Each structure stands twice: as C-alpha cells, then as structure tokens.
Image 1 (cartoon, helix red, strand yellow):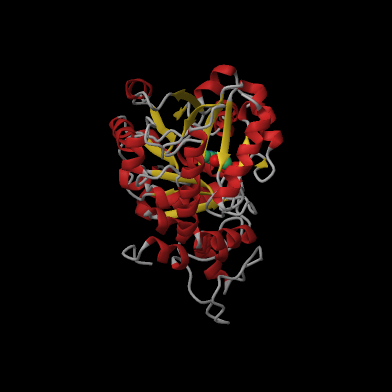
Image 2 (cartoon, helix red, strand yellow):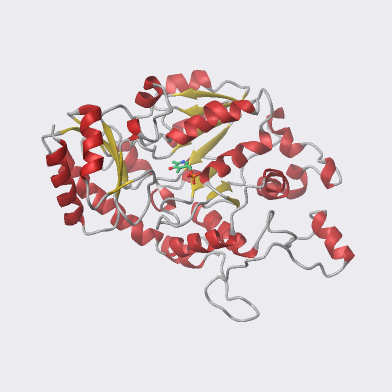
Length: 428
Ligand SMILES: *Cc1c(COP(=O)(O)O)cnc(C)c1O
C-alpha cells in the first residue's frame, strides 16, 4: 500500500485485501501447516526460491504474511519477518551475519531480559556481546570498532525512559561499517520511525503496544532494504554462496529483499521461532487501533507523571514527556514531543516502599508486561531485574527505589486515585 496514505489508514489496510475466494473482509486465520503444490516443477521452483509462494508454515503463512507487510509499511521498511516473540526477533535479527567470535555492541539501557539474552545466552553461541552506555557518545565511538557488526539500542528504553539519539548513533555505527539495530517496542511507529534517522534494522516485541491487549506474544524484524551487504566482509552470511540453495548469494539474487528472504528461508527454517497464525491475527486486530490507542496512552501517562512529580513520597520521575526531563529535547526530535506510556519513578522509601506500593494498588495490575490496555505496575529490583548485578540494575535504570508503570487506557482520574491510595499506604 502506498506510503502516501496516513499512518491511521495504513494501520488498518496495509498488506490486506478481501480474501479472493469468499470475499471475507477481515484477514482470515490460515490455521494450516502446509500448501498443495501444483506439480513437481512448481514444488521445485518454490524450494529453489525461484517462485514466491507457500510451502510450510514454519517459513511462511498467509495470515503472518499480511502482518509482515503491514509492519514493514508502518515502519517504512522494505520487508519484515515475524517471530514467536520479541526475543526470538532479536536472535533472528543478528543470526544472518553473526558467527562465533563476531562482535555486537548493545546498550546498557536495554530491557532487562535483553541484557540477559545478549550477555549470557548469545555468548553461548560464541557471539561476543559487549555493553556500552549509549547516552555517552564518546564511549559509543570507542566501543564500536571496525570489527563490530552491529550496535543494538532501544529508541525509548525500557524501563529507564531514555530517548536514544538515533541520528548520532547511526553515524557512529556507519562510520565503523556496522549496522544500527533499533528496538522500537516502546515508541511504536506512531511515535518514532527509526529508519528516518538512519537505522538499518528495526525489531519489535509485538507482545506489547502493537497487539495491545496483553493477549498474544510476537516479534518482528524489519529491514530498511538500504544496507550494502558488500561494503565489508562482515556480512558473508548474506553475500557468500549458499550451498542449500544452488549456491546463490542472497545479496546478489534478492537485492533489497536479501535480508528478509534470508530471514525466512534460512533463519526461520533453521531456528524455527515462527509466529502462530492466531497471534498474527490478534496483532493485526491490535494494529488497526494503534494510532488511536497510542494517543490516549501518552495523554494518560503525561497526566499520571505530572501527578507523581508533585507527590511528597516520590523522589523523582523519569518521563521524557515532562518539561524538566533531560530527554525532553530528544523526545521533541524523535518522538514528536510525546513521552510514550512506560516510565519509571523513584520512591523516597526505597526498596521496601516499592514492595509495599505494588502490593497496595487495586486497579493497576502487578505483573511483568507493558503495553496493555490495562495499567500495569512493576518493581523491577524485586522481579524482572532480579537476575542482574546491582551495577547492571542501576545502569539499566532499575535501582532498588525504582517503580515502573505502563499506563493504560482507563479513565485517568481512576488511575491517579488508585496510585494516591496506594502511595498513602506505602509510606515515604
Ligand atoms: C518485552 C520486550 C522485549 C522482549 O519481547 P518478548 O515478546 O517478551 O519476547 C524486547 N524488548 C523490549 C523493549 C521489550 O519491552
């Protein structure tokens, strides 16, 4: 669908058309594993990647394909590959060009689960992940040496409320012939489109705002289609002949679709972290209302943040939408002046006050998720960030006094009243 249509129009229509046999207007759930070949030649051309079509749902599925086209369109990318979860998307994103000994640099400001994935599990594959504070450009420049393959950051960091300087980070990555990969989960394409600022790949956890109702897991990798895979010998996974596919080079054969074709034909084929058709359907439903929901999520969050900033038991509020936030200028540039709906604040009463607060709320749900229609609360130090060291916790903005909110779509006065009674009980 033409990118000249507005975001709201594309969130509803991109990638979808009435189902040709029945005319069904909503995208059907193709709940099937396999697809009949017309004849042996047709099968051969599918397996040789000479014809586009469906073979087996581990690789491609018609419902998932609609979601992939819609997400690529919303981000302004060339192609997309959906996965079973956001974490699967992060693994798939790196897979085409990583190998034992290859280096990737990630932000210290990532979601806690991502820090564990990069710092522990990826190292078991021999992928050498190191971390850098991506708000310190001199440190980033020193860390992204010419042997680094990718720099991985979040546009709006979970949970620290940090807005990344994407244009500056893209310049540093590109000077080292490395990719800039941006996790755009918290900002969503409504607030930020990282490809406009030089990102090469975008990943999302679709589990959050994009599906939006806390009902399904999912992830996606979106390719800008702009990377010259021949610019260095770091991307042989895409440039070298692949013996499984008659010795073709993906970069030469598929041009700007090389990465997305590889992600399906090799990544999903061998890693198998495929998205279920039902989850693709639920995410498509969520996307239809994404622009509308994000507007209200952000407006509610701004009011809740302003309330907390005035509360005597609250030491600080880290919300990029507040006028005194150090990230206000970056929010203006990268997020259209909005601060998103997930942010942190600190309690003067420290760890114990945080535990009491999450146990005293009635309307907020105490759980480890974000981006639901429902408002959610979490005390990271006692839950999601438990497995990190103190230094990692503090670097990730999840010290002992920190509470994270994901502000939902309820009546905002009800949310403020709930926090007010719970803060009264939690003490200072
Ligand atoms: C939740 C989340 C992830 C991981 O996604 P899953 O769908 O839970 O696997 C990655 N990055 C960010 C910013 C997240 O919020």
